[in-house]
Image (cartoon, rainbow, N blue to C red; front, side):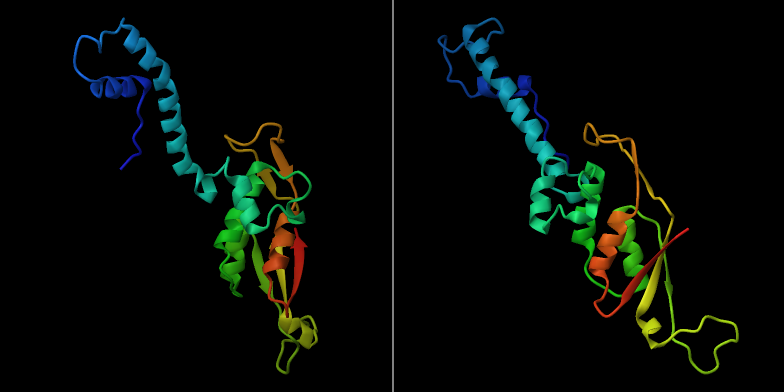
Length: 196
């Protein structure tokens, strides 16, 4: 069911319907009573529009005006996004923090990166052991706890319609990706980043 969208004319009709009966309460379009009631109805229509927008703005992926509220709830903004992140980057960071339920799988970290707007792959390493093919990289036991994030050298974040004014049309960089993945990485692991 869609949210009701009442206009000023709808509110005028509703107010006139609730007036008492009689010659003292005229409902003619040129009556003074109608002019007085018409002064209130644009405010009522504007409040209805704002209330309907609140339904859209209350959800993190489509928020704009409530973005500062979401950020303060999640301890954002933080240094991960840099000094002047775009509205899109801020929204993506809020969504990533809310949807990051915890995990240690490749699929989980790929999903966290996708929520931030990055397409990545992950490489896992294994320590050297008997039976390993000759010519492969030799590594100690610490490699069992290392994993590598493979991403493009520069991820381009383009400006979408509805973004904030004064933000650039595109920004390049992977700082948010590195900072957020290091935050979500298990404490006993080492995260490496490879940009191609």
